[in-house]
Image (cartoon, rainbow, N blue to C red; front, side, top):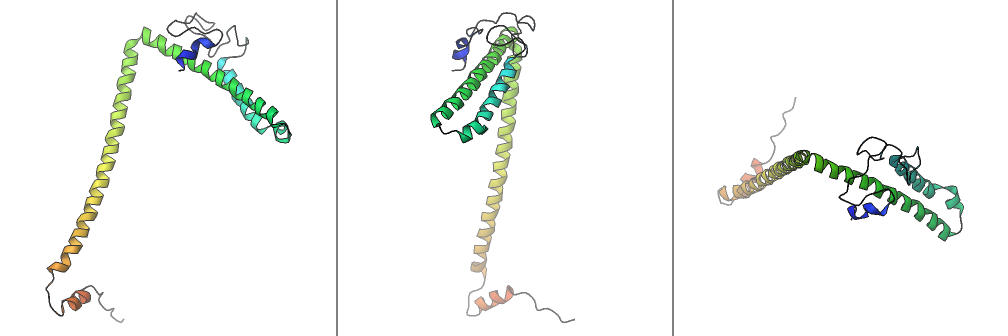
Length: 179
């Protein structure tokens, strides 16, 4: 979905096309440098994202909104701030998707290395999870063995009228010796 929105904003190319050289050099469009179009000369995409986030936050804690009585006006203002933030976030995402596409075209081996690294990390994480579960299984098997051993002890004791008393007295602690 995000890649389908890349052409929705001014100054952006459709997916699959490489961006024109920007002020940062060939193939370096303006994430960190100002570009003509929808951003000012000194305003970067990162600055816009930060400013729109701050505007969202400010609109939620502003005294104007706290003291305001018109709920519809408050809702409209907050919605506009959030929509601007989402638009700039989409532009930022599109920028990174374009860079990722450029990287995959120019250096496909780098993408394969990253994929292999991600798979190795996933395998390590899953191996650790398996070890954790095996430790839990071992613990509960030991608990079950202990319970089984305790249940077998009463049947191994001699049967008779005094067997219960002998068993009970065996479990009593020894009397303390006076000093």
